[in-house]
Image (cartoon, rainbow, N blue to C red; front, side, top):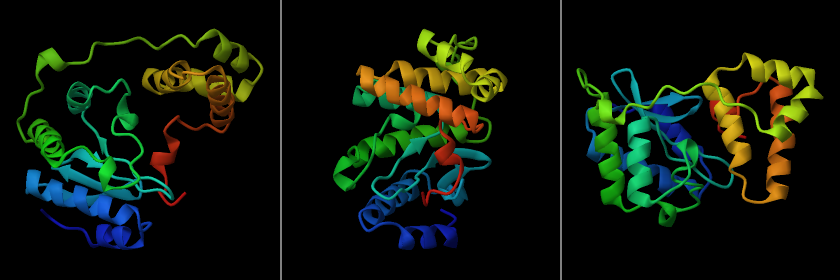
Length: 206
């Protein structure tokens, strides 16, 4: 695998708990897809094949993430791990090596991602995501947007997928207090023009 010295620096400067996690993931990518290359995306270690992202491994002050980019691989992870979460939440907040799935599963996910990213690979039409319209905001979000013009303008100008991220984040809250907190945060972030996953689009040193 083509190494990137910036990734070495990132791992060396990561929080102590994160270093063995990031090294384990790096080792597994090297094993599962030797043709991959290291780089930084949004200031976080990323592993790519050609121009396609396989996975990104951002590190924060108290946890790490392991984010597979392909929606097909995300569905595979949901199936294998029995997860109801989506996207960034699939592997949860990783605070140590013990939080990672077994190596055999991670290798399977990495190889699946590599297979989909390989030159000439054609996506399986059975796994194609259906075309979905922009979601309607739930009643509480719609009411909150009416009281904040800046947030409403941002939400209206966002792509359907960006709107879906916010709606899903709010509606998936299991407790009323959690939903209320997410709703307030949503309005604040929208007023500032931010996507729901804006933290992953800037420095991971937050």
